[in-house]
Image 1 (cartoon, rainbow, N blue to C red):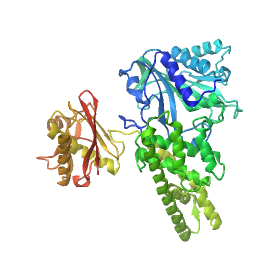
Image 2: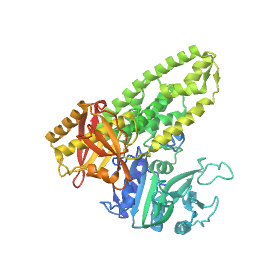
Image 3: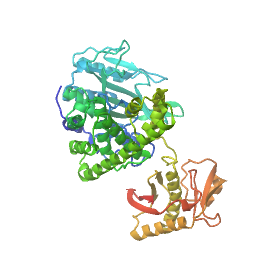
Image 4: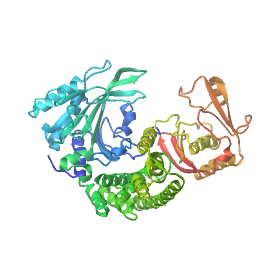
Amino acid sequence: MRHLKYKELRDEYLGFFENKNHIQIPSAPLIPEDDPSVLFVNAGMFPLVPFLKGEKHPLGDMLTNSQRCLRTNDIDEVGDPFHCTTFEMLGNWSLNRYFKKEAIEMTAQFFIEVLEIDISKMYVSVFKGEEGIPKDTVSIETWKEIFNKYGIKAKIGENERIQEFGKDSNWWGLPTGGPCGPDSEIFYDTGKQPCGKNCNINCNCGKYLELGNNVFMEYLFENGVYLPLGRHNVDFGGGLERLTTISQQVSSVFDIDIYKPILEKVKEISKNQNIKSQRIIVDHIKASTLLIMDGVLPSNTMQGYILRRLLRRAIRHGRILGIEGLFTKQIAEICINQFNEIYPKFGSTKDEILQIIENEEEKFIKTMENGLKELERLISREETITGNNIFQLYESYGLPKEVTEEILKEKNIPVTNPEGFEDAKKGHQQKSRTASSGIFKGGLADTSEMSTKYHTASHLFLASLRKVLGDHVFQKGSNITPERLRLDFPHPTKLTEEEIKKVEELVNSAIEKKLEVHFEQLPKEKALELVPFAAFEEKYGDSVKVYYVGEKENPFSIEICNGPHVENTSLLGNFKIVKQESVGSGIKRIKAILE
């Protein structure tokens, strides 16, 4: 096994596939630019979804990259040897070029000949066939050939070199439909003892570590039926951190060269050596630096909420470790120094990142102080404290469970229904996972008060653009979040400073006039007579809502819409355009905020 540093392994992978005629594409930011359906880029293939569906990629049909990703669905697993919230996913793609045999052969060649992974420790999974979809015999036969080539007679079955599973383990596809297909995963035997008779490569006990996965998109799931896609795509994803762990023969991702100095600093300032808490701090602060680098600020909604949650969780574990005083900034600085070569953008954002992280820690410490005061109030009025009370103090004020229990023990105050803490925590986690999955509809990422205001403001914005630029303007795309609105529309040139000023003045004039917002339900044909610039794309039914801003006879704005709206424009605040850009031939994008 070759001993490679993190960046060396990254470069080896990209170079290997470039030599196989793949074009390297840059890592996209963690925040999806054009897709409100998820909060974060959570897989290497995410930025390539349109091209996997058939759109032509400008750089060709064989691509490779190392994509930074963020996942919070298994945040409670962070602290074990291999789970991280942010990580790099090595990827290579074939957009209707090579398929199963070639993809598996290249993956195996990289693992076995370049990384020199001991093939005797490698196991693979394949799709066994299910729901009328045949067994993936091509992958099975290809893996047999590869194992035989290196002197291993591969068998198929439980605990064998090649193991077959159904759609629950070896299938990729979106629940909403679209391109999908079987996959083939590669695992590494860490040498740990199996957890029991039924321990297989999909077991979570830690004996087997997944190194990578080839997804073969050859079907289309539509109206509950699997049909031939008419094209064949390959999407490989492999965890860079895990591969580096295997390469360096260390016990966790936190012990590899790029993470180790961060962990050592956390250990140095810890009064006790709880390794799980130390790893959580390393992971969460590193993730926070990346999020802020990509433009996220701490807040109580959307991506900003996840950032705040990560930082506060790191601070809580700092208290468990007995770390005194402010500490997140010094850990963040080491994170930035370690990853600066991978992410050069850190160079221009370092000072801002460190200041934001330190400010957030100071705010949270004050919040925890309020939590201690709230605990004292609870103690003064209750004879006993419940597990649910302890969780509410934890969630609302960040007061660690251990701190609350220690204070209660000192005061000889019993805890009733202590299991209520875990019950409440599980309920909150489920809500958080649902929110983090971010499956949103209608261009709105949520229906919070601010999003509703921004949605209403977008009506005023579109009407003002048409007044200033002309009737050729219509909404071609929209994305609303609680922080801003974004509108795409056809126009040959960027707006001049004078045009921007006129649009802002028109919108703010409508806001100052305190216009009522109201609607009527009309047949689609009638609605189209009133709003001829509506872009339907078959998304509305035969009966639609027509929203008016102002008097029906002479409205400031009239649009067909199903989204939520405020009742009066006076609730919106001051409108300001903050950014404009071109996003395609003749398509302009403007972002605006309400102050």
